[in-house]
Length: 77
Image (cartoon, rainbow, N blue to C red):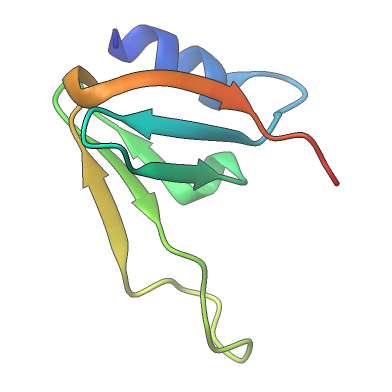
């Protein structure tokens, strides 16, 4: 996927959470624009924090935009 398309999703106002589907069948959720960092070659997505006393993530997933097959909005249940 073109990094510019991903950037548009991250900068959308209002922001809408979305799910990324990758070429290996995985999916990654972006629930807030501050949990993702995009470059031309990589999208980093912070994993949810397991310890509620912490506010800085210590783990992340990395995916190349080339391996992003589609993006779908996450609709609240």
